[in-house]
Length: 130
Image (cartoon, rainbow, N blue to C red; front, top):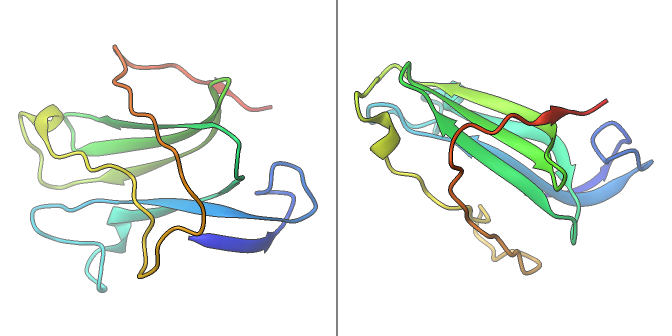
């Protein structure tokens, strides 16, 4: 969602900024995070993405039902991560549906958003900010 006037904490050090806020959501055995079913299946990143700045988004599924979502800078520095836990564990979890990014809501995105998809050849160990 488009966000206005955030603080330096989530604006990459800027006093305030406008940008795009991203989030995750998933389904678990037919349960959705909305309306008021299981909001643990939906997580919002506090980092505000800036236009014309490249980011790396990661998603990794694990056999125990957890899915790790990561937001990294273009130099692979970890900015933030979120985890969704699922009770419906599958033996073939890596074959589940993975949906692409979309701009939520009833309106089109206010700006063009370019996304390049790549498959990692194994777990990526990001560096930490700091």
